[in-house]
Amino acid sequence: MRFFGSLRSKKMTKVAIIYFSGYGHTVKQAEAVEKGAASVSGVSVTTIKIPEDGTIADSVWETLADADAIIFGSPTYMGGPAWQFKKFADESSKQFATMKWKDKVAGGFTTSASVNGDKFNTILYFFTLSQQHGQIWVGTGLQASNKLEHGPGDVNWTAGYSGALAIAPADSSPEEGSSAGDQETARLYGERVATFAAKLA
Image 1 (cartoon, helix red, strand yellow):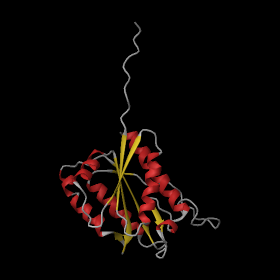
Image 2 (spheres, helix red, strand yellow):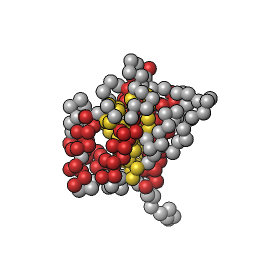
Image 3 (cartoon, one colour):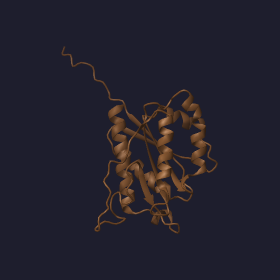
Image 4 (cartoon, helix red, strand yellow):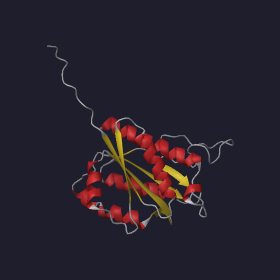
């Protein structure tokens, strides 16, 4: 009888994307992040949209606690994340008390109508939240498309290094909102965060 030894199955890496969207533009960005993360072999993705009242179910907290990576998302309103996301962040203090998210990979993305719009303040909010939880932050790793030949259709034209940024004009529908370049930036970012999570899992 030949002995082949035991086969060990590799653990599935779990990525959770939790975000709020007020008008639907950030939904499109979240979908692109999800697409990128799901493209990584051995990764499963759960995407959670924070409801209008900012209250998430107990099962969502369990999903986040079980994830290897948590990616935060929100539109930038008045120089920061939406209040619904802030409510979620405040309520995560229960997770903080027992460090349930410690050593999980973290990342973040945001959309606003303006080219700048103080979007970095939202990314910084996500970063600070992640560090309070003891997480490991992953940036985009993308060079900015900042030459004369470049425009909104190019990857990272908005120049987000710490997280994925997108521009959606105030009078645009979600379908005609952020550019193809912003969508591709979000996809690449989701792929990068998931890749790091898979390496650490």
